[in-house]
Image (spheres, one colour):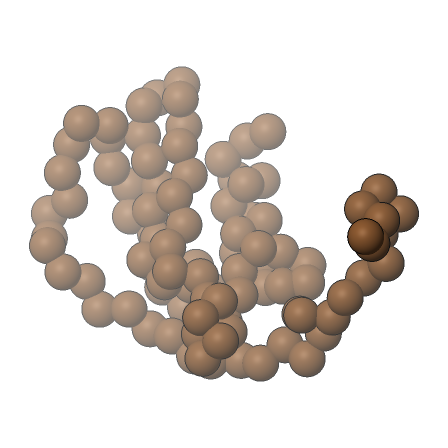
Length: 92
């Protein structure tokens, strides 16, 4: 799986992807980190990757800053906590 395909997955909002903006219920994306083991780099996004920039860093390197402003928005997902019937996990 390529870095770009992983990046696409985290750059999609729930339910199609992994990014969630439900901060008021303590369930929002705080950061995303993608590792490329071939060239030993990390792509890092602070906050939602839909609202913030990605930074690239070589493993063992350091960021050129110690603070970053993070954009965020809150969104409630009405079906997020919905119980789904799952045959693999029977109720006790």
